[in-house]
Image 1 (tube, rainbow, N blue to C red):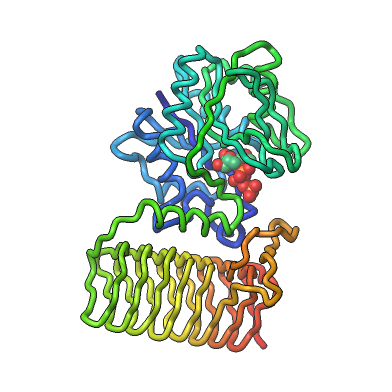
Image 2 (image 1 turned 135 degrees about the vertical axis):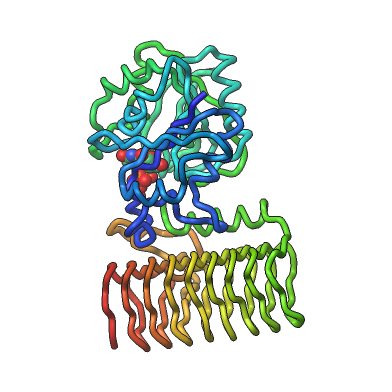
Length: 410
Ligand code: TTP
């Protein structure tokens, strides 16, 4: 069986982290998100077809031409937006067999795929989709069922409980006929949920499997922190491949990559993952649920908690990085602090595609893009975003979002 993985989207809700790259290559626990998808599909498939468009060169470079020895074929999305269009783009690579489709920006576990294939075969279905029960479906497509079959898909039904569509499907090649008939939706996209409704309307058997494991849809920046915490808490093995100097304290589980040096006085409380060739300490405090990439520097008198620091970035002197995401090759000046808690203890709100959204989090720090230079003694308000390639001068108070390529001086 082949797997089609959808990775052509612009990831606009994840700006500034997607200013210059597709979201599926952003690293969580030091691994591109899409690799978790491929890993969980791997036991069931013999080839991956990855649908690309936005910044496709970076995706192809990051993922390469095989995964676990199985070939990856890249196809460019046909003109037009939406998941149905993305699936249609893989048509010429699909033979006569059924195939799996998964969004490239979600996290799910292997049991879901196994149950989905089981339901598809048991029901001799024409299509199958993975669902999960939630109390509030306002952000999801609601899957309505009758017995073992799906009776309809309703987009964003409001604050009601029910089954949500998780973005993992099995189709037979006949789906392409229905995709061809799928009209453009209100938001201007060809959506696979509309295709499913067309299939159901013409008497096709669409079944489902209920998934009870962990799932996350990486749409907004704080989803990266949620997934990072989940992976570190549930999948991290204690393994020290770097050098830990005498006088450093490591509370397992902590993974430290080759070439990384942890200097005396560093106090690291797992789960924490640190990549290769990074410099940690002396005298720093790295608290749980933190991922630090390759070639990073976390130096003297720096505290980091519940954060993602991507490859090549530095928090070198007297910094506090809490509940924050720092993109690649970004530098924090000495004394730069991220605030992660509002004085009124309310949930931190973040601007996403021009609208202020409640992150649902009490604690959320800064979201900083790639190649940013932050000067000394910069204070960043909770939930503020700094666009990639920006320069923030010394002493600036970042109380609003900073567009990419900005120069900000007091
Ligand atoms: P979305 O998360 O709905 O879209 P997106 O990735 O563009 O993000 P944003 O809304 O923040 O801009 O996409 C769901 C999945 O489908 C995701 O894996 C990307 C993929 N996709 C495509 O491959 N092509 C498309 O045209 C769209 C809209 C999504």
